[in-house]
Image (cartoon, rainbow, N blue to C red; front, side, top):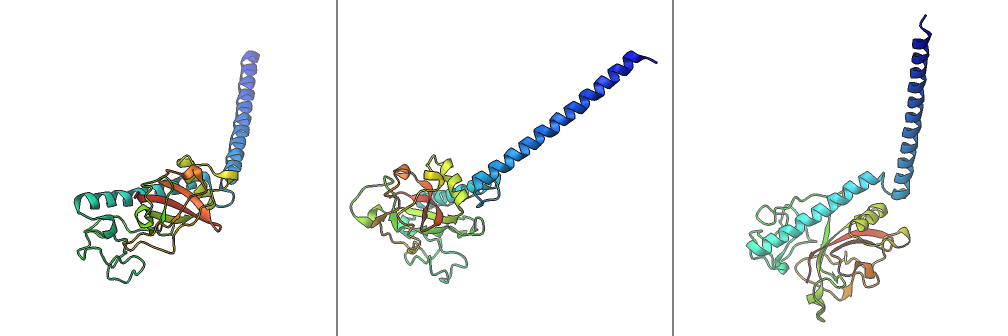
Length: 232
């Protein structure tokens, strides 16, 4: 019997067992950390951070599509901002929230119509974007005194708290005390039909959002992502 080879085999086997044990310990520790981090980030609102990141990217992308469509319509189709329509299919006046009486009847200034902006009319996370010209964003656009001339045209959509925080991280906006900033109001009760208000600001008490075209905040416990489509 070759004792030398036997000792070498036993040593090799012991090394393999030790390696497997250390691998299992490492994987367990990594999984525990990932689960803990996910729970801590989501705060019970979102399933995990990766899901939140994907949702965040989807929202930002859809808002950008709409903004770019408006730019094309203004540049190539002669649509002034007050002619823009966010009316949804079937474009027959039944979408009373967004019927813009000044919008051309050939639908060239309709964001979601094939003859207009050609933007996919879809929800994000099961919810639609809303559109308003009710409020102005501090330090975005002009500082004229006439209220209706300083209101921005903006998109907004309701989100969960965790997603709201992640959106602000993307835009380098602080979440004070671990929560999104509290805003003055969204203007969700005054949807865009071709006219602007601009009497009130949206973010007068949140300096970190001044000059920002995108941010997320809360009003009365409801969180919404805001994206300026046209700064005025």
